[in-house]
Length: 138
Image (cartoon, rainbow, N blue to C red; front, side):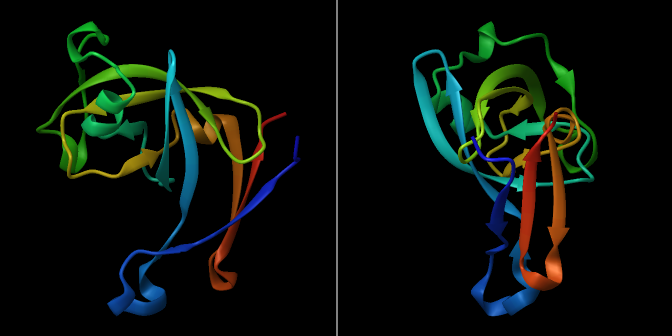
């Protein structure tokens, strides 16, 4: 198991050049016997992890069986969300449990926020060098 992993910033829009480089992280999400690989946007300003509806559905999560509705804030405040706990793996790191606000919105990327991605991983951004390092806690 690696102590840390280095990941490049990803070009979000070719027309915008370096201004469109984003800290996106390949992450494997699991629920029961299903898994999917997604790109998670590291968002230090997001209070919670946010899961777009299609990813939860692909993993076999059932909307009505998810937890009680929770209120999102900001631009997602008008969308209903439910709490979902998934197993997540990044690179060669062992799996961790991440809590997501699963929203019916398809207009939001998979967001990795303070609760609880940044509680499980330390991240050091080197934006001018176009990469970031991720280290599991402990």
